[in-house]
Image 1 (tube, rainbow, N blue to C red):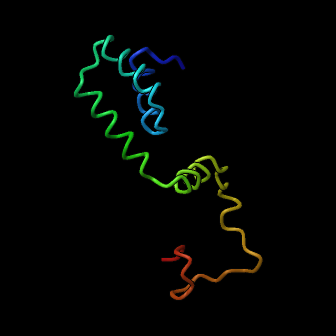
Image 2: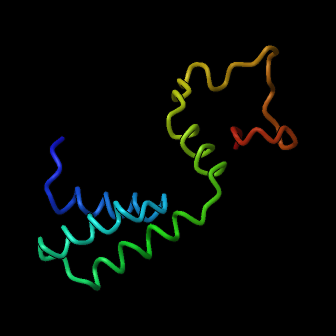
Image 3: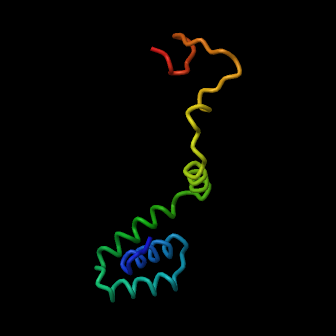
Length: 96
């Protein structure tokens, strides 16, 4: 996948804000303005990045672990050590 210059600058601004990398932020914003990205759009990018920055790192790691986990195959999903009898009180959610 190839990213265009505009997308790359938006990513750089977001990353600089999220990590408080002020020198990188200055360079990225300067380049973005030279490319024609409006000040309002840059402010929106910064606002979104600041909202992301406020999330605890542990939440980010947990979500990333969930997203990258191997999906459970259907054949393994309902494997039980004992025979399961579906009924109104079993709480498995797989009965009518």
